[in-house]
Length: 174
Image (tube, rainbow, N blue to C red):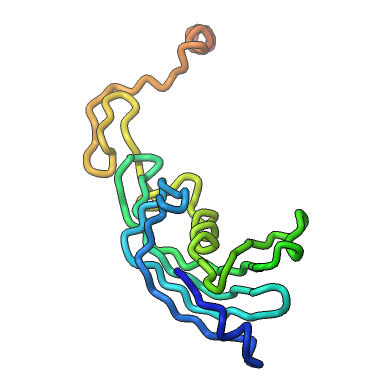
């Protein structure tokens, strides 16, 4: 999403309202793992305060994710706040600032939007909050059907303790 900043650089009006909707190829920006399923929409403002341009607003996007429990693909919508600073002056950029650098009169806000979106994705996305996942024995999706596996929930490393507790219970019953 390219924003031409010539107008707000040269006029007294230093604030411009933005409303942009565009299809983004996330892989082209180094976010190949993001699968955007709809155009990304951004609504906000860009303000020029020498030597910075401040982008502030909200974006909406829809992603295709894979459930961490059942491995099913699903779509999820995100609404993300975006607050980013840019500069086109090399001397204004320092190591302490979190300022993005651009050249020319066009500012590409796509990397800032993708970064904000990427930070909102849950580490373990779930297709539904009560997802039951996959059976560890046969791999059946437990959301769709129950499996017929016999589940032995005892850890093999603790098998000796099971026999000990069984023996203790037998002694108590006598």
